[in-house]
Length: 198
Image 1 (tube, rainbow, N blue to C red):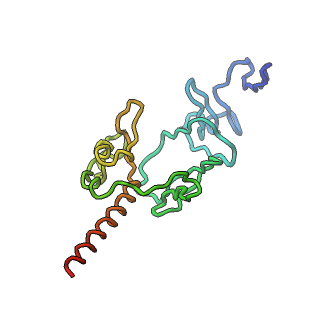
Image 2 (image 1 turned 120 degrees about the vertical axis):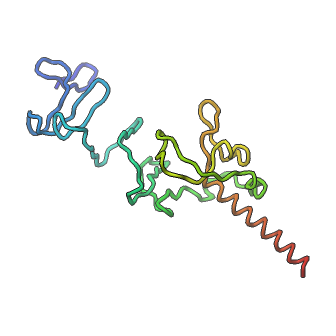
Image 3 (image 1 turned 90 degrees about the vertical axis):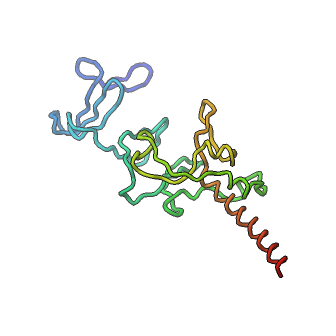
């Protein structure tokens, strides 16, 4: 271990070349290790074993966190991962079905107004059934929902766009407030009809 003039601690072997494996507990392949490749730093249970899970207690991480071993949650009891927007700590969602509750206080909403969309916009929205491609989900699972392209034609403020300006995401949760507004509109219409009848 040496420390160059820039203050960075560098791990080297006896020949003072960069290390490729840092063993713990011994030098044989039966011991866990941190193994360096040209593109990654891997944690392994043994020298030549498959990559193992790495657990960190406390500490701060910066940059992108990438998990290449994610699989479906269909057989697990789970919840969403939520981030505190001030401390950036992660928490488990505690809302219905484990979703993140989100920040909803009027204290954080400098602009509030009644929505101007309702029944007419919902009638233009096309509910569909679909399957995702293998890159974005389980290609064998049938799902119900909407597409960003359909949302753009009815509720464009709920649509997110990619770097090329193409419709990319659709805020399903935002549809809930439109549904509530629609029910309210219909109730007003029903009461007006009842008043005419009686």
